[in-house]
Image 1 (cartoon, one colour):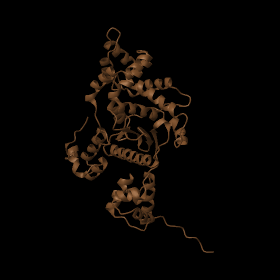
Image 2: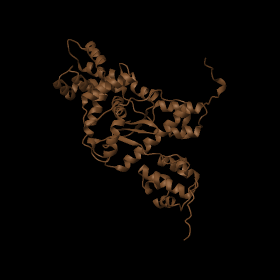
Image 3: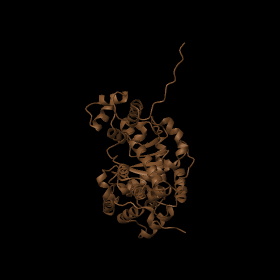
Image 4: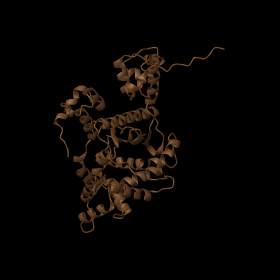
Length: 396
């Protein structure tokens, strides 16, 4: 009987290895062969099929474009690095139902994980590391309630040292101190997902809707923070039930909303501001609107918080929601504060890329790739100069 020959491992960069990597990356990104072909400028999906069979060689510039499209590094497609381990992404979805379009969800998850992994690399290149770890709070969504979630918010606010106006400090604190990676994407036309968070080898990441006003984005960030600090406790439930509509989902989301409300409007400071603003024991529509703006939350969120604290009655809460005068006051107070992120990345990420470039850790091409902009647009982001160590200061 002839001896069986052991199969030699595929050589990195070989057609068969590239073929297998492209297929896995495409499926992981939720793209069909036809969609990849159209994005690549190829005539039909059969070209992709041939590539994935190893029957078509891929040129260097095509491989670079494929890597960007499929949200993986060129090294992964060449077989020099393993395919990134899938990270769990938790979506805030409509009524706890699964995404109607699974492929769109997969594409967005692939983009989020790719950007978060890139962010982690940029932090390494810029030599900027988080100085603290997010707290881990034991939590059982099935047994917990909103009162417990409010208590967690007070605990986390103190640990993160968010101060009297947490809305102003939340994003920079999470990014700079705790290394949370925040991104923006247009999610306004998607009933399936209005925000998401993820944990992986890259750390913690949050995806927010760029279509929302800034006070709503801040509330969403606080909401997702609740999921991050309770991640380890809830992860097993998510991994088991993520493709279904778990009965505990709506309870968890209510708890996250209660957490966000308390985190952004600390009771002591809020009650003090109410006392200062109130005239003859009353809050005018303008007072309410300016109070909400002062704490960086929506009028709706402020009304709910004041009702929870017993400052206003349940009836007044409902009246404000439907009162045209209160709504007009809010529009007047908030209209000049509406901003929309121009890119998927925060200013913090752009600063880190610029720092890595100025330190000489990356070149202009890599900087443009990190920011997902054409090479010619780097100048307007401050990428004109690199500095060597000759000008460095010696610290004592």
